[in-house]
Length: 390
Picture 1 (cartoon, rainbow, N blue to C red):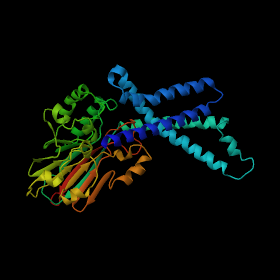
Picture 2: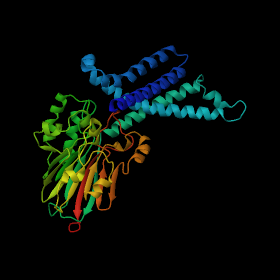
Picture 3: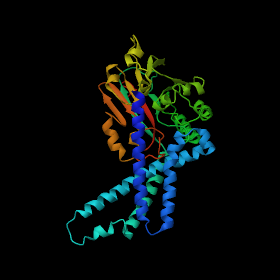
Picture 4: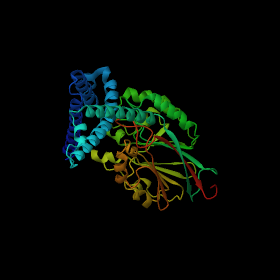
């Protein structure tokens, strides 16, 4: 049943991808009518770019060889370009359709917006220019994360007499698109915040990454410093790639990966990390929070790391003080964030249910198109205080 669902999903995705590219190729061919060289160049360039990403992800490495990362990067940028060009061209076609409904004789809009007109060629050129600008700005936004600081007050005792500083990062998707140099800059930013705890809340390693690439990152991860420890949980991409514990393995245990496990640090601070819900698609049932806690009698702080922010009421029922999640990317590409916010109780930012505090990060990296236009990537600094040191 699961294989059938997966095949159906892949078929739908590729069919939609093919239809969008056919639509863009057709509109470009119409716009450049009368200029054979431009028509041919457009057809060849866009045809090759549309094939770059799916072929680089599907074909075995032996068929693509050392050119695979370059195909993947070009194809990833094209995904973003395709998305925004589609939106611009579709908007133009909607305007053209509405112009036909205007009941004026000799309506000039019908002539100006016709695919055979010079105005249509100009408008298509403007769409290409606007799309290029959006992709450039979206890429620049994606590589310069901000530090987002939030103070949270709890009633329970903290491990220190001073506020607890927790750094949260999610969804780096380290691999062929997000490279080691990005990780090194992020490590410097995190260490500059002097955290007590560092939480790596899933999808830190992308599924499209080789074992040798993963090993190369170990020295950078080992440079992360936190007084009480570095705790991680697997995301859906580490789960798909069967690398739930890879961060723990490549750092020799310096980063502790909790997969339906708990750990106690400091003065009775309990941290629970859940396996990603993607594991259930592989026939493995993940544990409930209370099942992981066991017979917990301590009234100390209880933190939960859960990659996907779904069923937030579970943390509230379990008496969790703070849950941190990621996964959503805040939609990543505008206007997908408008849909994204309707899929989750909290798709990005701070939330509260009863005495349980939540923070859902939009992530510090990107997946697929290497651009972020719905939010600014973030490294989150949570400063926990209690009523005594508020």
